[in-house]
Amino acid sequence: MSHLGIDIGGTKAALRLERDGAAAGAPAREVRFTWPEEGGAAADMDALAAAVERLGRPSGDPVTSVGVALPAAVDAEGRVRGWPGRPSWQGLDVRARLVALLPGARVRIADDGDLAALAEARAAGCRDLVHFGVGTGIGGGVVMDGVMRPGTGRGSCEVGHVVVDHDGDARCDCGRRGCVQALASGRSTLRRAARVLGRPAGFDELREAWTKREDWAVRTVAPGVAALAAVAVSLSELTHPEVITIGGGFAAALPGYATQVADAADALRRPTGPAPEIRPALLGGLSSLDGALLLSRGLGIGTAPHPS
Image: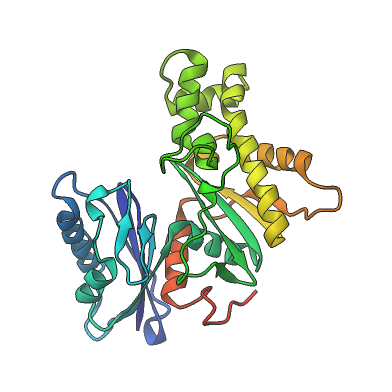
């Protein structure tokens, strides 16, 4: 038996195949690819099918379960309700496409941020964890007692759309004002850098200036740090995690970013309130793919044990 994890992103995707039984000792097979520039969802599905074929499963070793990490709004049947990252996927029945591609396999789909949180929790040996993925947008999730919350059947934990500034001018990509994503994402931070400098600024320039602690870079990043700290403290009051992890490409590329969030959270915390450890994520860019494989095995969704 084989288990397949698929991490679907806006520009690329990654697949990893792991085996049970006699083949369990074999190394995992992994394929990564970039989505076609043209052709929409149909071309994307062809590219995904080709990637599955490149995994090279031996005869008699069927894929029995598939876990998919997907940063899109998906209904209970596995149909995409909306995804700004790939608009042509609107209405695409991802589960049906994968069932047709891998007959007999059980297919589960969950939000990539939720699955990243699940993988980070297992990597940390922690059953109660909140994860923030700070990249182009803001993702993340909540794990309580080893299980993703609110759960695959009830939607994803959209930490990026927690409102932290209802009087603010920053508009989120979702159309609402005040979401933490509107203040802390890589995209929004670079927009703020352009306003601070009076000209466009690229990420490399921001990273170099942040590393040197130049004033304009510190002022640019500070509102996002403060927004994440507010969400961290608020979610801690609700869920009482042991650990809060800060991951994602944007956060990982700015030295000391997680420490800044931790310090800002300390300043907001009640003296007798929860005080989780806030630190960098352990898995980096692998967290969603690792989480997809856990999902394929039924772990972390309340139907299977979650060992410490």
